[in-house]
Length: 240
Image 1 (cartoon, rainbow, N blue to C red):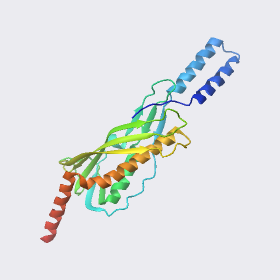
Image 2: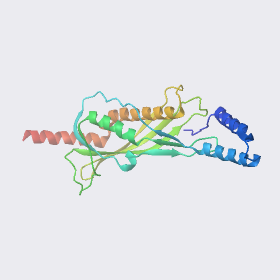
Image 3: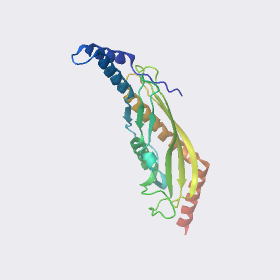
Image 4: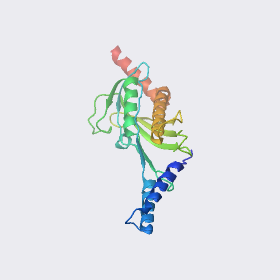
């Protein structure tokens, strides 16, 4: 995916023209004012655009699986963000924070996908005191890529994410590991700002992640085997 980024050339020209016109103010030599103009332009180019992703994540319409699931969000996941440094003076650096939206989306999804969901206070381990759940899910953002438009008047952004999942026992013993991808694209170019376009692309990617998780969870061979074993154990207990 490309990573081209440019700022609006008309806005840059307007800002520079305004500063230059003010150069006749008394008290400034031409050289001093020129230095000030260059400094201000450099600072303007260095400013990072920040997006704290937020959006609406509708609950899935499905029959919950008969599983009591624990979920552990690692600090890196809860505070997930990515930084893209500007390649030149005409570009802006980007800080996109997805952590809060990640937790909101996955919380909404899992609460409606399983009969019971518990957010764990600590990472599953033999010495960790955990509530009674059937297993613990640990999601991670393994990789993220994004593409931005060559011109800011076409605000269509793309975001691609690869997740890595672990399903473990409350003691931290592995049950299954798998990866999954998600993709989001700004559905319209007619948005007020680049930040709004990036936010919308991220929200679409998160919704795509939720949809893929619902349809693929039970298809992971180790997960399918675990679900079958869990059903057999419950049937055995009920028959006693």
